[in-house]
Picture 1 (tube, helix red, strand yellow):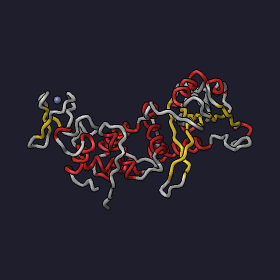
Picture 2: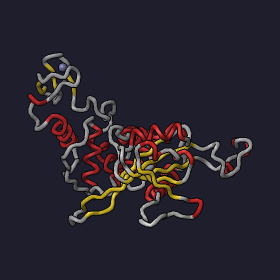
Picture 3: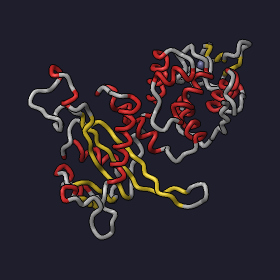
Picture 4: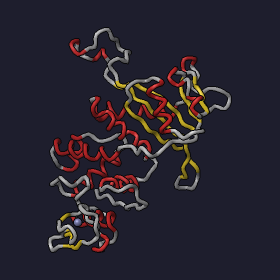
Length: 316
Ligand SMILES: [Zn+2]
C-alpha cells in the first residue's frame, strides 16, 4: 500500500475507524450517533447533533495543518528505526522544521504509553536501574554536594519487569521472546516495589530478582521467588540455570544506548515517555515493519489494536 497522497491516507483512516466507506457506519465523534452523511467537500455531517467533522477528529492529527502523508511517513520512520529517531533527523527526512519534527515525535511518543491492564506471568525477571548524569561530568556549580560519581542521590530510579516467553516465528518454530514493562519509581524499596509487582505480575508466577533487600518478601506474596546473587558473581545461578536477570539487563543497556545515542540527554519530566518508547521497541522487535506500523497507526486514530495489517511498499 502506498500512502502517497492525501486521499489514500484519509480512506485508510475512515476504513479503519468505521469500515468500508459506508455512510451508515460512520459514528459522530461528538454525539456517538450513526446519522451521518458525506458532504460535497468530503467532510461528514451529523444529522443528529448537526455538527460537521472530518476523519481527523479525535486522532493525533486533529490539531495539525501538516499533510497526512507527512504524518504517515513520520510514523513509519519512527516505528521502523530500531533505536529511535531524533527530531533533526526526522526534520531532514520529511522536510519540515526541527520544531515541527519535535512536535510530531512528541505526539507519536504519547502513543507508546503502556497498557495498564496487561499483566505478566510465567517466568518474570525484575530489576532496577538508576538513570541520570554522572556527577563528574557536571559543572562544579551543578554538582550535588557530597556526592561522587557512583552516588544515586541525583539519579532517577527506574524499575522493570520482564516476562520470558515464546512466539512462533515465520518458519513455524518456537523462538524466545520477552516482554518488558518499566516505569520511573519514587524509590527502590519494599514499600514502593511490592504494590507494583502485585499489580503487574500474576499470582503464582516465578519471579527472579537480585539479592536486594527490597525483594525479600516477594515469596510471601504468592510468587515462587528465585534470587540471583550478583555480589557473589553468580549471574546464572543454581542447578537449572534459569535463575538470572540477564534478559532485563539487556533491555537496560538497550535503553541506555537509545538515550545516549539518539536523544543525548533526557530530563526527568520526559523520562517516562522515553521508557515507554523503549518498551514499545523492545516488545515489538520481532514484529514485521508493516505490522508495527499498522499497530501504531491504529493507536494514532484512537483504536485499540486491530488484527489488520497494511502491506507497505516503501518507495525509494
Ligand atoms: Zn452528532
